[in-house]
Length: 137
Image 1 (cartoon, one colour):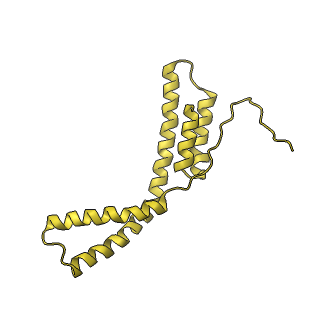
Image 2 (cartoon, helix red, strand yellow; image 1 turned 90 degrees about the horizontal axis):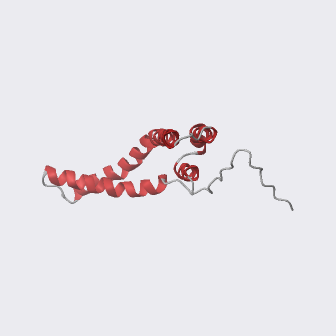
Image 3 (cartoon, one colour; image 1 turned 120 degrees about the vertical axis):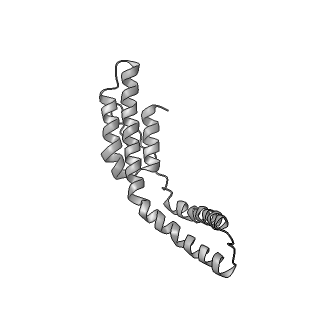
């Protein structure tokens, strides 16, 4: 699998179509247009593509962080109140913080399942100048 195919597979899995089209696809097009003549130039161009992918990923994470935190805090607050008031489970501050950390970790699991992106078929890259394959009946 080539570098470009790995980038496309990662972007398809973790980035939205809009971010892929606006950020990753132009970076890959620049890489295809100027791959670099020596190994240092190739490495610099590939690092630029990785930076574009990481920037798109940061944008995606920043956009959905508020919703993720709210969905995690709702069951966390519910279970902490239940454990603290009904069962008197907390006797010290260190016990409270360890219980809070455990409840937050357990509350993240269903939210992560809801936020995990669905799998899409991977796009195939086409080399510049390569003919498109037509399927005839």
